[in-house]
Length: 196
Image 1 (cartoon, helix red, strand yellow):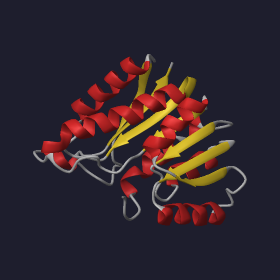
Image 2 (cartoon, rainbow, N blue to C red):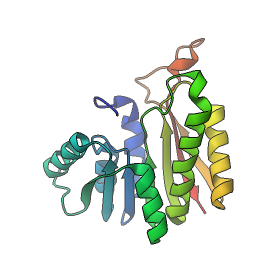
Image 3 (cartoon, rainbow, N blue to C red):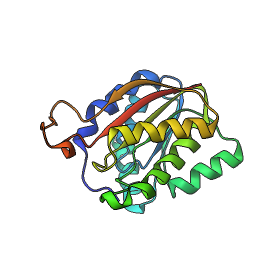
C-alpha cells in the first residue's frame, strides 16, 4: 500500500491532461486520486479511480468533493487485478488507462514475480483500451530497471495481440535529480503509450 503524496509523479499527472478531453478513464492503484483528478481537469467525461484500500478510497472521495469533480469522477474499492479481469469479461472499454502500482518488488530476488504482476496488469489494460487508446503505465521499483520495464511492456503487447507505440518515456520530475553512479535514484519509469 502506498503512503504519502508522491511529488515525483507531478509532471506525469499533468502530462495526461491533453489526452483526456471527452474520454472515459480508468485510474488504477489511485491512492489519492491525483491522476484521476488531472484527467477531470483535462476534460474527461468519466473517471473511475480504483484502490484496494478503503482508507485510500475515502481520501479519494474527499478529494473528489474538494475539487468539485463528483459529476465525472467516482472512487471504487477493489483489487485491481480482479477488477481488470472482470472488466475484460464484461466487455468494458476505456479510452485512457492509468497503471500506477506500488512497488511490486523491493528485492532483486523477487524480480521474476514482479515481472509477472506488471505484465498481467499491462496486458489486461491493453485489451481494455479502445483502438488508439492511451496507456499510462508506471513502475516505482528501483530493482525493476528501465530495460526490464520496456521488455515487460513488449511482451504484454505481444500477448495481448495489440500494437503499442511508446509516445513518451518519462520518469520523476526535474526536482528529483538522478545521481550518476547510483542507479537506484532513477527508480521511476512512466511510459505514455498509444494502443492500436
